[in-house]
Image (cartoon, rainbow, N blue to C red; front, side, top):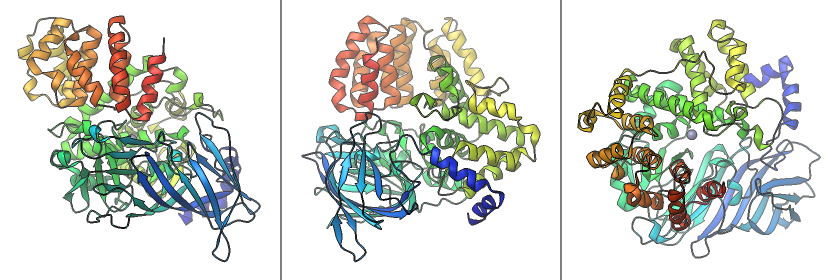
Length: 618
Ligand SMILES: [Zn+2]
């Protein structure tokens, strides 16, 4: 690390870098981290399930950069702040004045703390709002046992500020510790060291010795059991789900080893997972040391564990080497999507990896039709910091991975694998920009192998819409055979019983259902439903695609299971497209509005926001 900054200083690059930083502060944060940076956070909080609040205080340790600065600006949203103190030179806390700006609907409220000097620490006494955007407070009926409440956080990308006053930007990293009080009978877990043997007496204590950005702050509280999966892997889940979870995740330890042999040591100590209730708004969240997972990935047959591979991959791409602002999101997600396929290939072989990759590429190509060309770039050109300047969230995953795959195929793995590992090693625990990656790519790969990619083609990948014409599409032979069957089945030439589905993996069902969407008739969907009970499959990726095809065909016999699905699953990836499909037809639209009225209270605030937006569209 030292070597790199020294080199930069010697070439004079460091000067440009600093002046650029002043201009390029994260537009989604109020923090002035060019003046002062948080180096450590301590939280002492009490969880009150009756009031649905966390209350207590946060202590921020500060590293002052600008010697003239006398203000600390933090990000907050819906926090009630009662008192702020600064630590004096003699170790005494003194009250300091502060102001909160008017609420900005996207960014929240800037908190300005006025300081007479540059204290080493400030202490902020506060409580969260029941509507805190990062937190979901579940009533006992929303859990499996129905006996005790549950609470969990989702801080990425800018929601940590709704439960802790922080410099809420991925450009700032800090270590953290916490003491959390929770009602008896509940266990508290965090994205830190979790002591599986602790009873929580005197408060649950945590320490996170590796510096992380704020979006990786995470907490979960509920009736939780823990099972060990291997020497450094384990799973936390509700008691009724723990057996199923332990079975589903049996390969986790092997995955960690596979990733290590590709990209170097796992640097976070333990890799545990927390299975949440079904209202968790996303598939998984790579909270360090404790990945948060949707229970909808427990299919009973280990068919959806690519999600674990994805979250685990973030231990390198994202958590270790982090996008400096959300504009560079593809450095987190595109890299992770690429690494996921590599882990799957190591564990399950190239045929499985190729099938997954082909479906990922096809789904991306289909999605292009509904995304404005300007939003299809990995990175918007120029200094535009409005939300228009952000790439479509969905596209950066497969497109970023496709770029890395292209480089890998052309350079060969003997060159590309050490190149990528070097990127992680040389930027470990740093926040990075696209320009830094391009710089690294030119110096460490393209300079030696110029034929791999021209500057023009590289620019097309980064700043252009869609996928360059030169890109190679994955063509799995096993999926090609499936295409032949599907075509014959759609034409009525192949009976449903002769599809040969017994040997199909979940990914083949997903591909089949993607390809009949909008083409199969009501009678054909009914046939499938009766033959395979797709409306009741335990695999939610398959169920989702079946419901979508059924809605688009007008096959309404699925309403009962679809209703149950929409009421119990709150994952945005599933529910938003299903409501969208339902709203296309007036008869389905009225039905969907009725379902949503009932379902809304069960959804996470982030899911509610997405569906509300969808429902408000004309
Ligand atoms: Zn991810």
